[in-house]
Length: 402
Image (cartoon, rainbow, N blue to C red; front, side, top):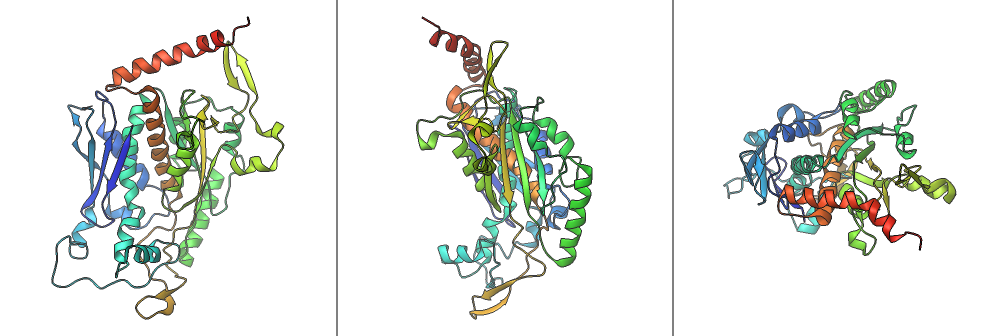
């Protein structure tokens, strides 16, 4: 199984991620990883931190001469801003501590953190709960993406809305009607050209205008984004137990992203408002291959991939740090006060979509290895090719008229 762990604080020395379960002989392109990290940092409405950091990953282990060894891969992302925080986040005892933060921000992990872990300083909550941690996830997800692309599985994303501004022509409908025939990474080619990662120019202009308004007000905005995976074979995941379902793993992965408050697979909540005849995907056969007429299920039925594109839609709430703060309570005096400011973004939906790509990649790579596992890429490839070739023959043999 593919597993990954991250470690590090927002303003500490850096972020570390360790990935285990990747087979040997996978060619790793470090530029690919760094490009994904750069994509995460983009987007109109990001804060000053993005001007300081220029994330790159250093491979510490698990790779030799550009190929994986089959052992755990460790990556390190240096925090350039650490130089300004050496005393505030010192791992050693020092004579004078930094001033304690006692004013929690509504919507952040500040208050729940100090309550759960018995901290006397909110800084301890802020550092690990920060979305800065997702840079390590994108590094791990990049490895998963490289692995999946060997098998022609591609992942892309776009921003559907920010601040309630939706496109005139919703690209989602093309996905649900099974009209999207390209590899998912082609979505990124267009979305990455937009500073807010949308697919429509007029929508982009309206969104940027709304972000400018939010900045003037000292406020923040959230939005929705869509992540798509193409080339996923039939049979990843299973219906036999609750913890084997592909869609359950995807929902868990996306809900673990900072500020994500809702996840849909396929048509999701809208399917609850229509007849079953309008919701389910009719099964058809074309050139001897079974498929679905539409893809409203988002590429998953019964917790198992159908072979159609995986479609995930998620909602990100507005960022909790406001430059025009709302009310809270100072824990040192137990009196009401305005929340404190912490360097932050005004909008991070475009970045969240890129993070979503990595989370989907990690889930799919894990499910792929569960089904086609092997110690080397060559062994996994043999297992995969054997399965793909035999699917039509197996179905015909099992259901042949007697």
